[in-house]
Image (cartoon, rainbow, N blue to C red; front, side, top):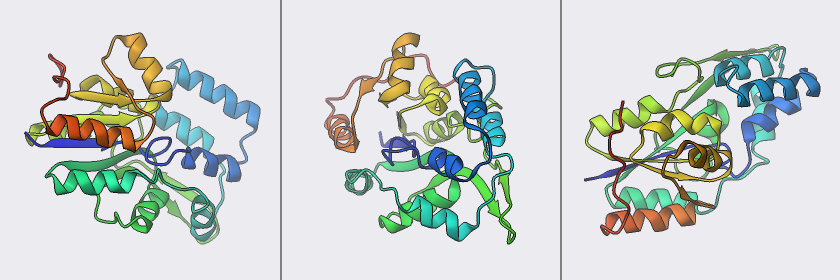
Length: 228
C-alpha cells in the first residue's frame, strides 16, 4: 500500500515558525495581548483561526517586504532529499500548514519542490500595505484555519497509509486520525498525554529512516479504529 506523508510546515519542514515571526515583525498587537491570546489558544478557549485573525489585526506589509523577511529563514536541509526519495518510491508527500501560503509556496519553489502539493491559509496583499486573510481550507473541526484532518482522510480514501509529521497544536486534529504520527515539541507532549502512539523525530533524516522501515515492512502497524 502506498504511503502519504502529511507534513506540517512551520516548526517541522521549516525548523523555525516563519509565520509567527512574520506576524510579530509586522503586527501592531502588543506583546502582552499576544501572550494572552496564545495562552487562551493553548487551553483550547480559541481555535487556530481565531488566534490568527486576532494576531494579524491591523498588520500592514507589502508582499515584497513579506517575501524578503521570510526568505531569511531556511528549510530543514533533509526535507527535500526525503521528499524526492519518497516520491521516487511511489509515496506521496504533501505540506499541510496552518500558516500562510506566500512563504510556503516560495520556500518550496526555491528548494526545487514547486510541484509538491501543499495547503495553507491565504494572505492577500493590497497595494497600500493592508492585508486580508482568507481561509480556503476550513473543513474539519471548524476551529483551525486549515484543519489537517480532512487532508489525512482524503489520502486514506485514495488508498494510502497516512503518516502525520508535525510539532505543534495545529497538528492535533490530524494526529487523531492518521495511521502513524511522527512528532516532536508540543505535539509529542500532547500525544503522550492523550495516549496516542507517536514516534519522536528530530528532523527529516529521522522521517526518511522511518519511511524506509515502512517500505521494507519493518514499520509499526497502523493504529486501529481510526479515521472518524
